Image 1 (tube, rainbow, N blue to C red):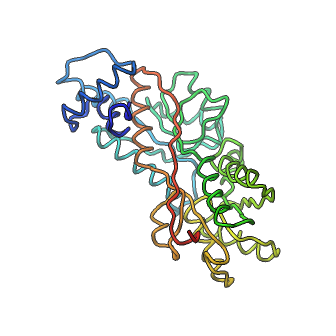
Image 2 (cartoon, rainbow, N blue to C red):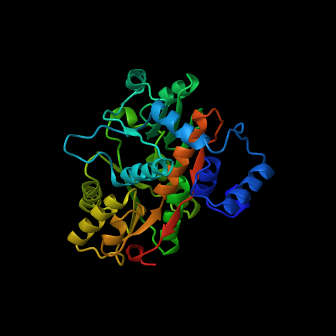
Image 3 (cartoon, rainbow, N blue to C red):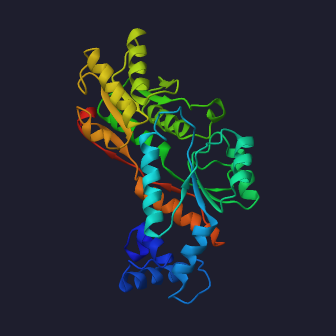
Length: 342
């Protein structure tokens, strides 16, 4: 619909929610595309009162964001990209005049997920992550719980998820390194912080699969995937480099599964007197604020947390209104800077 109307996805979402900030001309263009493509619409209601009534009803029903894992006291609520996602969700809720809660507890398996939902009874829920309770999320969907998940799209998945193209993003990053002449490429990522989340239903698993696909296509079968114990991201990156060098494993590039991990990789490389990118090229993931402050400036796979938040909120509100929605993968792109050498 956005492509047909010549506007952004976020603008289409706001038109469908009858947001007052959208001009009449833009609304008319989007609605023409909606009718042309046959998008299912809600029954019409009096235009003047509908947005305010919906806002009041949704405030009363309650919407909650559930973070992926309960981290130790004194630590941040989540990692930098997850905090960016939370900001994107907050912006989308603010634009609709809605408040939302952030859960103080994080379920860690199917049983604690079931107990959490039974105890709190939110009408709508957004889960940032799914690997520790994928089966439980399917069960919640079957029970009629309105929810959207940030994560992958699994084969047996029945609930709605929004997520980046992890496979494609990692494959493109590894392919870029290969085109630059790199042949011994390592990928570094964190193991999930809890054992129940260490499953194939994870963004890390998809990124490693994309990396491996790029190596296989280039005839480079050597697999240097390194999953480190969960902890501070920069420490994960530094420990991986220390380990490779201590074992005398040759490598000329590192694909880090987050920008903070990439920062740790670069710090360790410089400590070992390896030049970046001359000796070792480095690419991060998420294109967060960290990428702009690392030296050399960090090449990174970009995801859009604001668009992600907008889509998760828009889809959740439509589910709450009884409208069927589909899962969606967001495209990634490579922001090329100095750390990869071209």
